[in-house]
Length: 212
Image 1 (cartoon, rainbow, N blue to C red):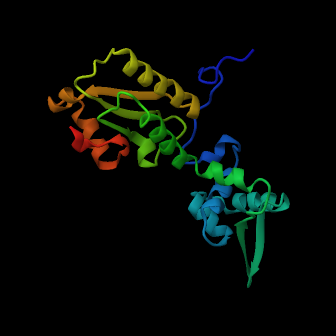
Image 2: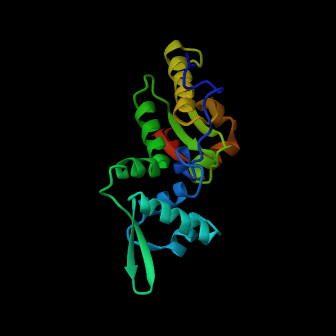
Image 3: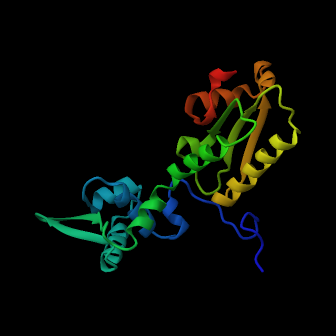
């Protein structure tokens, strides 16, 4: 019997800059991610540039493989060939969902944290994941600001914070760093650098920095 999904022994870390690598370790994943987000057909060189791939021949090979599977459409455009995702393909909804994983995480976090009781004064996603630069080795970092009147060990509060930590690790496979502070801690200067980072490029999940 397998251990639960959040156990480190069976969960690999997610690459937020290339979510398609969840199902593909080669160039097919990055190529599909580019085409899934494109609002027009692209040349092979454009696909390679957007995907950050220097191997144009590798990208062409991936496009050819995906075309033979019917998931990519190749269209003649003068002397060139342009490519687009076949959105009628049975796999297209799943490809689009995988490409949108970086947006799905904040949505799911907001849904979870906004259901808390008691509510945090402020909850924010920080670090490389919030900045859009996270790779497979980066942790997922959260800052949670607790109301002063709520004790850190209050059962209801502790249960929801600990559950979030476990669930986020299960959702992504990445280690979770959750910094938890009371309002009075931050007013006294605690976690000042983390708060500055959150104000600059954090992704708000619940509450607001103005709430304290």
